[in-house]
Length: 611
Image 1 (cartoon, helix red, strand yellow):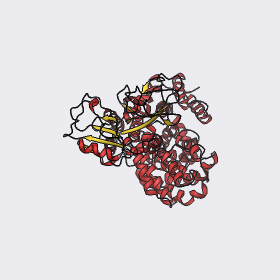
Image 2: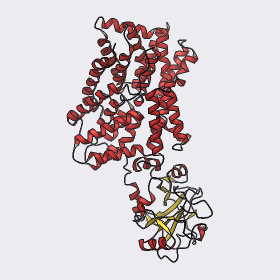
Image 3: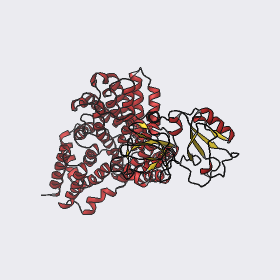
Image 4: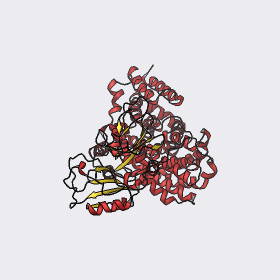
């Protein structure tokens, strides 16, 4: 067999395996690269070169930046703006704000990241406003598809077509150059959804709905009897507590007042120093009158936002949070003695309360002096500490975490610690990409490195943030494009396509490539589709003697039109359960949207990028 024949067989087998979905896509992609080497189509270096390609590195770095925005509460802040602005009555306003927000987030942090961040927010809105989630979630995803064409960072496909333009000698696409086609795509998508979406979408709710953590703090403090009577007091310079040992604090002259913990300055961590310093905080529990008396006599300042004694605001905020853990059977903590106000062995977490059978354990034994409470299987503890400490120290087999602190923070704490740094880093990356001062891969690596160096995420968290399936898929499938060019397969397929079109002209070429890309994109990953079609598109443009830039941009638009099946993109599948959708629901709204994408790809794109 000739190299062209081998390449054709490998493509056919890969497409069949992608469609069958019986073999993981990562395995299919790696087998594709290895098959190109085994058949002699490419050398080993060529077959594995895609894994180190700058475009792949750029895509991986975008996942870290996206996760940085999410963990710092920037996306939660955006979601709360949506809830406040949507109101309760207007369906049109709700849809407009939802689609605008998700499209902007997609342009900056990628399709998967934006939908994953806003999915629970939109579901919560549906519950609160008593609307069917099926009427909101598909518009969310389809608007995100359109928003992926608003900027270079919106989709891996954008990066691929930009690199292809550079490789073809016609220059890469600018960061905001995609906006020229993204705006009409988004405007048409929003118009179709608002005008026809209600009739084309089902009226139902999903069986699997994400948990709403917006009232998580209040639920916990009410469950453990801490809803009121919790005060955080700052030690002033004139306080007699300055320079005193933490064990020297005696509150016996303030009836009903109990010291819960001493926290270091503004870090919200339990005090580790042997003595108290100005700026440290006392966390006390009791009645308001005694708390006010303590503050006056000991020169303490009650923080304004916690002066009412509301437990939720005092214990659960941008700096610190709460976590509920259960002692499982055979836990190493069974028999250990704990008491409210105790600092854990790590020195980072405070035990606020202990419950057994849903009832708080109080009384003579629940104190330090009495030896504390002997833990039993099934006991629950309420722990308080910084968000970072909760993330690190609750990864312990001796306890079961009821609700992940990381998930709670992402939903319930807008603009948390590091949020402004994350926004500045994002703005810096966008500036570098827009000006072209450095290559995209360098801009992405600098931003990802800044996220880690600023302490927003650890190296381990950054590893987990990367969607390795996407990265390996892109890197392992890139050699297929190389093989199609090296063997002449791309040129041969392009010539056949041009022969079929005949003298119909470049518009017919765009139409043919759109249909090919759109059909494949409904069955396999749009990224994999783009990697197969891009070399054909460039070769066809060269054969016709026209610029490949409009052809590449049209291909990007077609790849984004993955509307007709739930398996077309991970985000389509992501909303299937919460929205209660079935397979046939997608094409009903997807067909008119795909028709609009066809109009833009074939007739609008050539007006902006000339042949």
